[in-house]
Amino acid sequence: MGHPMQRRTIEGISFVSTMVLVTLAFMWLLLPYYGALLWAIILAILFYPLHRRLLRYSGGRQNLAAALSLAACICLAVIPGAILLASLVREASSLYARIGTPGFHLASGLQHFSDLLPDFVIDGLAFLGMDDLSELQRRVTSVLGQMMRGIAAQAVVIGQSTAQFVVGLGIMLYVLFFLFRDGPRIAAVIRRASPLSDSHTRRIFERFASAVKATVKGNLTIALVQGTIGGVTFWLLGIGAALLWGALMTFLSLLPAVGAALVWVPVAVYLLMTGAYGRGILLLAVGVLVISTIDNLLRPQLVGKDLRLPDYLILVSTVGGLALFGMNGFVIGPLIAALFVAVWLLFVDEQN
Image (cartoon, rainbow, N blue to C red; front, side, top):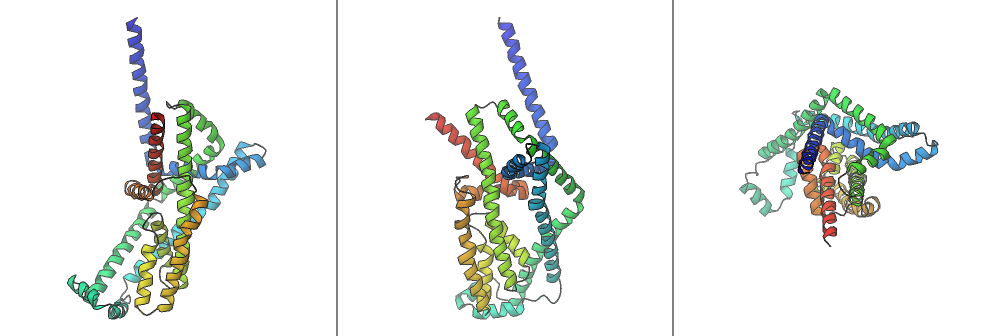
């Protein structure tokens, strides 16, 4: 009696161990293109309401609806993203080239700026060894040069890995087609295979989908709007590298408590201190009245209560995600944080 039970226990442990090892090996196999798979899942979740409509209009023809949904993703997300990336790299390279030319001087602007500073600020700069304008110009130019060299280096890396990028894009679009076509069946299989209860699995799935929508549809859309308004304002005011500054404001807008103000406030202060009062006041007005209020206006409509995470948790998870996963981290970090909160809330509910 005991021998068959012991054998079944050993077989069960062996099967589970084999399943875990095979799963880990499969994940390791997919690791080089995890970003492509991640964005295929994200786009499938974001565009699935459109896919449902197309499926209804196409008379239930799955392949046709999936192909139309894929075409919509390419037109609305992939092509604009590629154009923006190419323009951003071109502008960064142009700014880097201007910084390296002998005609790029900051001395006159720095002198005007220095003349308007109060004495205690000048004394503080002298204490820090920054009272020499030529030395300050050299440091500013050096910092800008390092920034542009970093961007240029990334552009070179992108150029050298064009084949890998094209393969990743192809994988993403290929997988996205089948996620549109077979998504519900795949989700049903995962739910049946999950060792968790049906209610727990359903709530975690719902939380994951809500986190994706809130992070990408909400936070990214708000950041893009803020960065676009900031970049257009910079361009209208004649501030150089407006697209680059707009992209930087978009990135900073993803971080709570930091935001685009980290870019437009110093620029507005500089304009005011250098005598460009009209441009400085206009930039301050746009920053305070438009850029800073967009978050409060759009977030309730775009995010709502999908992602009930405090700002400090979003900030820490986003920064941690960026440090670990690169640019994909701004999605992965908040996703992990949202799932962490969801699982622990389920645990707390079970204890009550």
